[in-house]
Every structure is written in structure tokens, then in C-alpha cells.
Length: 557
Ligand SMILES: Cc1cc2nc3c(=O)[nH]c(=O)nc-3n(C[C@H](O)[C@H](O)[C@H](O)COP(=O)(O)OP(=O)(O)OC[C@H]3O[C@@H](n4cnc5c(N)ncnc54)[C@H](O)[C@@H]3O)c2cc1C
Image 1: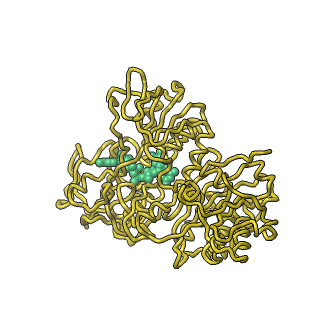
Image 2 (image 1 turned 30 degrees about the vertical axis):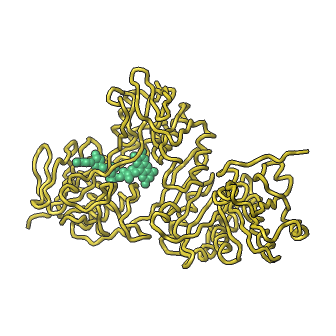
Image 3 (image 1 turned 90 degrees about the vertical axis):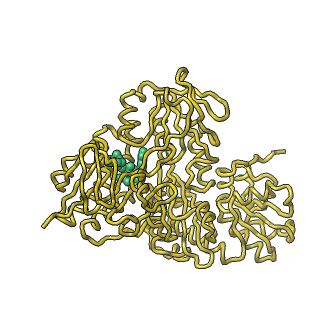
């Protein structure tokens, strides 16, 4: 009997995962893998860290050697052989070396870095994308690390910022240029603003709402949309990627607007006998059921495995993702999972949010750090829809707990019931995830409202709104030390019951403390004493100071 022939196009992440799984499922299949470059299976994710020397050798980036794929998994590996065309009707793929028939085809071609229009880039040599091992090799060959003092990075997404941090760590002056209003477009502006502060505090020259429109190769100057000419020794471009799918979309394969191939849970495209996985494919968005595009290494592995198993007659399903991501940002970590406010608004999904700041270890344990956490949930069912978080410690653990909670469709009321591990070096007795559940639950059951610092700022900045009081319930010593929100009046929590007569019951009271807890307790006191319109500012003055950055000092007489 003729062996079934599986052809895989692309040898980085999804492709080798598909090949190895296909072999594990079917010893009898003929498996051919075409890769257009000389490399397979290297850790793209490690490249920024190899740039700074944190990953000390290029070899460490290679996850699987070609030999291993050939010998251990009996894969017919064709390196340096790009597939140039496909004929799905004839089940054929073409390369410059020949034509090959397939029974099943797995498309794992990933994406290519986007080059924005920059006048004069053709004459400019001192730049590279920041995506592939070839990019890394080019940067090393040009001796960029030794020769450059100032490096500019275009694009403030995950890749741009990872590179920025690594370059700062080895003493480079770094400018980051971002067209959008904020860095890290997948995060809400609150978290992006905190991330921007970390970047600036670490010496990065951050230019938001800015683009590079041209380059003068004779003077090594980037020409910005503002008209400024910025001298730089080298430029890294990491704005985004576009799926490499034209070979299939031109044959009618269904795809998202950006070209990502639409697949089902088996990773089958709309073209018969053709599977797709990795950055070139969409995957189901687990929370909405729509097709989503999550170009991440976690999904390329899982999608590749699924496609590989199914292509050789196995039964496997990948039911999708929901946007979990994490990155290191100097001493901080920023992470997200599920849907954030931008996506929820875009999709017209009703949601409520709750912002909390809690210690990642108990107050009595040395060096306590804050975790900034916002959760998004359905106000009717209370099911968790998403979370964003940032802090110096323990972010990785909490984002994965919250990701699991989202997968399990847990509600905000379930979060405090989780039996999470506690010992002082790791967590307080009330873990930040548990606190987030309590805070969110309180905000919808106890009559007071919670507003975010950005909502509060919009109100306080609006000259047409004046029927409110900003009530600071911290102790005066905290105010002297840290500052306050302009126009606040101060009544410390412990004096509040005795001084209620100083407050006008007909006004909307915006309460804040340092991080939220005393604001919450004060809100309840006010509500119990007949104040009807009370809002606690989530995250209190700490969030205001970090996110809104409009604190004022108390003027001393
Ligand atoms: C700098 C960087 C850091 C990252 N960090 C993270 C991280 O921390 N966490 C995370 O989850 N993800 C991260 N990612 C994303 C992750 O690397 C990708 O999601 C993953 O590599 C996608 O794998 P893929 O196989 O789908 O596509 P790719 O990695 O793009 O590989 C596609 C392969 O197909 C080959 N190919 C393309 N066209 C053809 C053709 N016509 N014929 C033959 N071969 C072809 C290409 O040469 C390439 O080798 C990072 C990416 C980068 C660039």
C-alpha cells in the first residue's frame, strides 16, 4: 500500500511541531518538510536576550537540530527550498527544485515583518528587522552591539520593548518610536501608561504618536513626522507581522482581513486536505467563538501538533486561545489574559471592570511589592472575561491562575473561593486574585460604585461638571509625603463618622485612599449614613499617581 504523503511548509515552530506529532501518530506516513531558510526550530523568543548576551551563544537558540528531525522522526527535510506555488486541485506543491504531490498539506509559513514606508530606506544599511535568526545574524555581522552607541527601535509592541530593555541593559542609549498613543497596544491605556513610566525611568527616550517618515543615509538621521532629524547609529524595526498566506488566499482560502487563514478546531482550512497552524493561521477565539489571531509561540506549537496528528489520520482538536501574554519590563512584569476593555468595547460586549492593588506578599514580610490588577467581567453572569496585571513580583503566577479561571468560566465570586497556596515568601493570606474577586464582588453588591482613575480624571477635568466632592481618607502624614489629587478635601477614615456634617449629601462623593481598601470602607460608611451617590476610586492615590500622573503637593502654611 502506498504511504500517505504529508507535506509541511515552514520549519520554525508550527511546522516541526506538526512533523514530530505526525510521526508519533503514524510511523508509516511519508513526511516532507520544506523550509526556505537554512534553519529550523530556533527560539525566536530568545533573540532579544541573545542580543544583550543574556543568552550567551547563538547555538543556545537552536531548539532542534535538523539531524534530530531527520533521524529521530524520519522527516524528509528540505532546507533552503522555499515552496513557490501550490495547486490545491492537483494536490501539488512547487519549489525551484521540483514538483511534489501531497495527500495532506500543512501550511506553517508564519508571518513576515512589516516594513513601513520610510523614504530613503533603500540607501540605508544600518537597520534590521527584529524577527528572525537571519535578522540576528545580520545585526551581529554588522557588529552593531560593539559599534553603536545609540539605537532606535520602531514599534513599541512586545518585540520592540524586549529589544529596548536588552539594549539598555548593555549600556546603549535607546529611543523607541511608536505611532500609537501608547506602548503595548493590546493592553488598556492604564497599564500601558504604567509601562511607559517604567521605560522612561530606565532611561528610554520614548516618542509616542510619532513615526519615522524618512531616513538620511548620508548622516544616519531618521526623519520623524514631527520634522525632527534624529541621529542614530542603528535602527531596529519591529512593528508587526503579516501572515505569509498569499499562496493559499490567492486560491480562495478563507482568511481574516490580515490574511490569516481561517481554520476549524482540527486546523483544517477551507481548502480540502490543507491544514494551517501557527502565525499564518487564525484559531478559534475561545471566549467569542469567532476566529481570532494570536501570533504566539504557545499557539503555534499546539496548532502544529493538532494539524500534524489530524493530517496522518489521528483525532485531535485545538479549541483555541484567548490572548494570554506576558513580558518582562526591567524590574516589572506586565501580563494579560482574555479580553481587555478595547476588545470588549469593539465587540459590543457588556462588561464591568474592577481595579485593585494588593501586596504580593504580606505586609509583615520584607520588601512587599504591589500588584496592579484589573479584572473584566460580565455584570449579569459575573463570569470573568479578562484580566490585566503589572507588578514587580508574582505576576506570572497570577496571570496563569486568572487564565485558568477564564478557561473554566469561573465567576468573580469563585475567585475568593480558590484554594491558593499561601506562605509569606510567596503570597499574602489573601492572594491578589482573591482580593480582586472580593473587590469586584463588593463593587456590584454593596451599592457604591467603583470608578477607575481614568474615569475620575475625565470627570475632574470637565469644567461643566462640578457637583462633586473629592474626598481623601488617608492620614495627613501620607498626604504630606506623597501628594494628593487636586481640590480634594481630607477627612481620614477614622474621623469620618464624626465629621460627616462637613460633607454635602447632595453631591457625588469620589472617595480615595492609598490603594483602595480604606476608600471602600469609607464609601460604606457614607452609604450607611444616607449619602446616595458615592464612588470609590479603584487603586486610590497610588493608581492616580502612576497612571494619571497629575498629583499635586500639599502647600504648607
Ligand atoms: C523576537 C520575538 C520574540 C517572541 N517572543 C515570544 C514570546 O515570548 N512568547 C510567545 O508565545 N511568542 C513569542 N514570539 C512569537 C513566536 O515566535 C511565533 O508565534 C512563532 O515563532 C510562530 O511560529 P510559526 O511556525 O507559525 O511561524 P514562524 O516562526 O514565522 O516560522 C515560519 C517558517 O516558515 C518558513 N517559510 C515561510 N514561507 C515559506 C515557504 N514559502 N516555503 C518554505 N518555508 C517557508 C519561514 O522561513 C519560517 O522558518 C516572538 C516572536 C519574535 C519575533
